[in-house]
Image 1 (tube, helix red, strand yellow):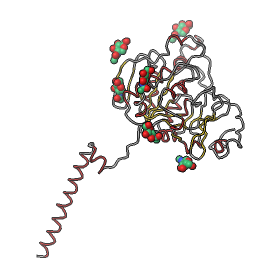
Image 2 (cartoon, helix red, strand yellow):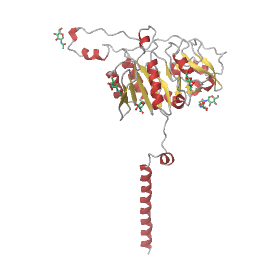
Image 3 (tube, helix red, strand yellow):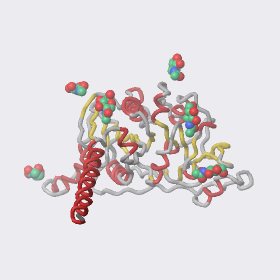
Image 4 (cartoon, helix red, strand yellow):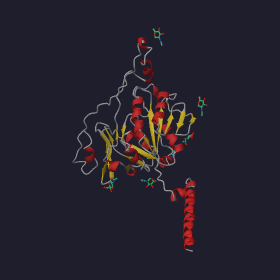
Amino acid sequence: MKVLNRFHKFGFGIVFGFLIGFLWSLIYSYEGTSFFHETLVKKEVLPQVYVITPTYRRQEQLADLTRLGYTLKHVPNLLWLLIEDSDSLNPLVADLLKKINVPFVHLNGKVLSILIPNSLSFSNISARIPEEYQKKKGKPRGVSNRNLGLEWIKKNATDGAFYFADDDNTYDPELFEEIRKTVNVSMFPVGVCTPYQVSSPIVRDGKIIGFYDGWKAGRKFPVDMAGFAVGGKFLLSRPNATMSFVMGKEEEDFLRSLDPFEISDIELLASNCTKILVWHTRTQKNAEAPAIDVKYNDTNLVELRKILVLVWHTQTVKTEKSKQIDHEKYGNTNLEQLAKLIV
Ligand SMILES: *[C@@H]1O[C@H](CO)[C@@H](O)[C@H](O)[C@H]1NC(C)=O
Ligand SMILES: *[C@@H]1O[C@H](CO)[C@@H](O)[C@H](O)[C@H]1NC(C)=O
Ligand SMILES: *[C@@H]1O[C@H](CO)[C@@H](O)[C@H](O)[C@H]1NC(C)=O
Ligand SMILES: *[C@@H]1O[C@H](CO)[C@@H](O)[C@H](O)[C@H]1NC(C)=O
Ligand SMILES: *[C@@H]1O[C@H](CO)[C@@H](O)[C@H](O)[C@H]1NC(C)=O
Ligand SMILES: *[C@@H]1O[C@H](CO)[C@@H](O)[C@H](O)[C@H]1NC(C)=O
């Protein structure tokens, strides 16, 4: 009798165990459906960060993209829209993107090549700078690329946030975690930018009271291209959003095109704008490489010349000493913390 009892308990245990296992496998097989996904298998889904990077062929391009690409690789749920101002995709850039293996979309003037892991598709949109601007000395560079990025976001993104990240800046991966929090429009400080060596909203008691930027030029939003991010849903609610081809007014005109959007609507990131997570470093321009003497036409130099120059040497441009921050005027604002970060 005792033995039978024990067997009963034992058998019940086995049946119960199987039942649990069966239910568990059922839940897992339904993981894709939202009910099980949200209530039983809680996986944190981070909002997507879209990074729009305009780029063009120049001596420093591959060096800059190498640095930026490996920075972006540290950030989860990020999609890099790399948009070339060119008529054909630069195969060297395409190879570099594949090598870095960060989720990306590689766009250019004639081909739109989407290479999100496991997917590949093409369509035709132009990111070339319009002809009327091509011959101008002060070209509004990157505008057509960024506008193409905006079109892509409008078509493909339903949430998350996007950011215009030039290829020659320096980014702390933490910046993208901040950008992820963006609902409508967010702003944050940019280091080594303008004669003040920092461009930032001025924040007192958690509220924006103005802008600290060495080049205001009568702008309503005197900020750098690297100093703001915009929510995907917000962009969809602003179908007229676009960047203009007016040199020096790219940021201003874009932010104005987000109307209705006021200074008081700005979401302040980077701990109330006390941290610098992006630096407007610029890569020194290098001259075009000379032709190689034919006496080397059977050496490795032939291959190197195809990549770019014989000497692959980049230097960061020296920046000036910043202006003193007026501590009396800006007492109790984020500028007191920012002042410690600049020279
Ligand atoms: C893109 O343009 C090229 C040449 O202009 C054409 O051959 C190709 O079919 C186009 N592709 C798409 C997807 O429209
Ligand atoms: C993005 O939009 C374009 C144009 O509508 C489309 O061809 C492409 O497949 C979309 N990409 C993704 C990842 O949804
Ligand atoms: C974003 O905009 C919407 C609509 O204007 C507003 O209701 C909401 O409070 C804004 N969100 C933030 C975080 O500012
Ligand atoms: C920003 O400042 C406000 C007001 O002082 C404070 O309540 C808030 O917690 C601060 N936010 C962050 C992220 O530090
Ligand atoms: C977009 O611009 C057009 C033309 O200027 C204007 O009529 C329209 O009201 C604007 N739409 C929005 C949503 O602001
Ligand atoms: C290199 O240049 C020499 C002299 O001009 C020529 O004879 C030879 O064919 C060239 N070799 C290659 C690989 O181009």
